Image (cartoon, rainbow over all chains, first blue to last red; front, side, top):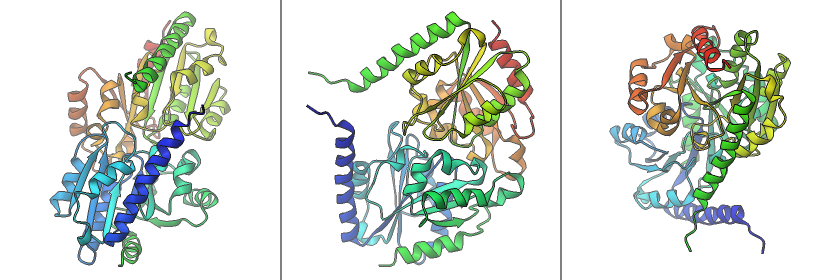
Length: 215
Length: 215
């Protein structure tokens, strides 16, 4: 008998992800899945997005972490509905976790659901959650070689947000090289250059999100 | 019948790790396992270490990446024996991979073996490879909250190298808070503050390594 454990895990996840997607569609919710290394700025990007989008779009957030609630507490403090998922060591969110979290949100009152995945450039690339768009953040201090070293996540994403551009004068980050590698891997990817610290470039990102989440 | 897959995987890994350790001991090799997020400076720290230690200590490197050989090429270029392991998507090195790599190195000619793990703060914390010391790098741009969010790897490490201290003036990194959390999790951990870019603090790290690798 042929044992296909990995395939079974993956197709079980995908089946749940498709149910998540159907539920989102029924409820008129657009969902994005934000992935990156630890400390690239997922939560900072979400906070900037909340600030600029909350008057026009009904937002909610699902926070994924292996431990702690520090990010969810930041979102809760500004009055946006948030569900924290602690994966208990799992290196990525999975569709069944999102399914549980969706049950805790008033979906018909939400236009845009932002899912912050666990900080990791490897595992999250493998699990479809039911999201409409995959977003990966790369920050300048991580270096321009990340797409070469973690090609799967950069190939599968719809959007790349290049964060911490305010640090450019102090780093040896070759933007041209980074963009060339990324466009070789993923010619249709949309790229935004931003600084979540200074706010530079955030307007274009928010404009794109607003269009995406229009009912 | 009780199915204990995870336990079996882990104890199979540990059995191989103990064999790796025995082989290292027999050959007089000290091994360190360097772990961090992508882009925290594992390869930069190794390059600095090679520069300052190569005249006194016989070095070799095992490079772990999910894809590419860019790091191994840097090590090879400066004439240090290096073996590249491509994990093919696996989010951490495992003991059996190190076992294969050890077979490709002239162990009796090596004093210090530096293992660069896959860039990830979650998976590498779980797998013992047979190393003498676990080292985790945290870099300032990642933020001071990483030990709260990834407590396992910071609890299990013998050494924390805080890298990119040259960027301190441009970031809001609270060193006191970082050290307090880390020492709460891991009171015996040794901490070095360095900049692999400017070379600041590298001497203390290299001095510690030199003592560790003395036959």
